[in-house]
Length: 409
Ligand SMILES: CC(C)(COP(=O)(O)OP(=O)(O)OC[C@H]1O[C@@H](n2cnc3c(N)ncnc32)[C@H](O)[C@@H]1OP(=O)(O)O)[C@@H](O)C(=O)NCCC(=O)NCCS
Image 1: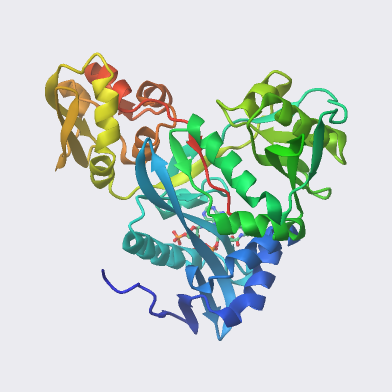
Image 2: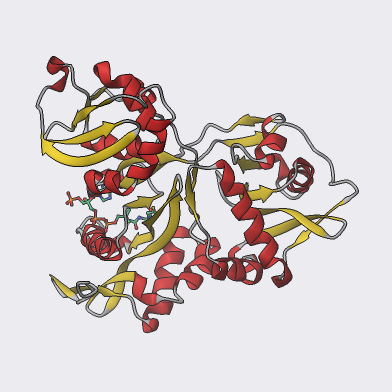
């Protein structure tokens, strides 16, 4: 493996880009608080346990810009994937628009390649990250507003803050909820351990619903009385029963700022079954940016999943070669008898539609491969995605996928 690419870089003008260090902690907390507000400080402090995953830019020795690359493990179908997430991006107001974040992203992308990340995610301000090689490839499930007052949780449910004794149950409930998703992020046990002790300092309530002493669900609730949006949110929850979900939702709805409550859905789970019938969609911004630098490599990696999809489809007995033009380059997918046998790069075709071939713009590839809308859904939305006669086969290979997305902690 090549050396980790963490040698300091001189950016000129007295500015240096380098990996974070333990003695940057106070400066990183101050910059992060100025950019993201005090409620994020708990998570930032937690992520500073490993300062080397941060990048900082110093100007004459002072930290003026920073960001962190998280390293996630998960699965695509049943195939393990590893991916990154860049977060807590901030530049001091006097040093913006000078390319300091662009330089850090180039660094993170080298580290991501070194770690074998298949793609990198970022949640964040609209449009900006398109300038750094990202496109909208995924989206959060809908956020819903419970429509009525649900009252207090009733017997036999007890809703109370999680404790260290709940770590196994939390981890199990989260894991069980993954069964409903096709693209999954695992949460390391250490994050659960931090959440039960450190989440309150992060302005968060981590609650458990118990029946007869047994934990059947958790929810993570944040209240930000001073915020214009997101004043009261449940952004992560999993339950093994509809009853536990109702108890947690009643608790959130009845508490402070309950009338502002917005709740992230978790489709296909008991949580969703309790929520959806009694809530209406909040209209908010919910795409995620994705950078997927090597579509051919990614497709080769997830070939077993593509083969499964093919083997279950009307094309199971067919053989052939599917050429998808990305205009400047192309991807060829060979298949035979229910198996994807090869994926290769091929020369681009400028105007594939004239030849009856599919065309997918490179910035739409992450959405296609990660199943944001399914192939036809993507074609309906994006002008330079046209499937042509290959549409039914592309729908089989690239259906809509349910994504269970990462949080920062
Ligand atoms: C958003 C932010 C991180 C950008 O930092 P920065 O150091 O100014 O970014 P860069 O200068 O590296 O920007 C890269 C490019 O995007 C441009 N750019 C910067 N902010 C932009 C924006 N909001 N929209 C569009 N383009 C933008 C820059 O001009 C630069 O263009 P160039 O490379 O073609 O010259 C900074 O403004 C900030 O800290 N904002 C407050 C906190 C925040 O919103 N963080 C992001 C949370 S996800």
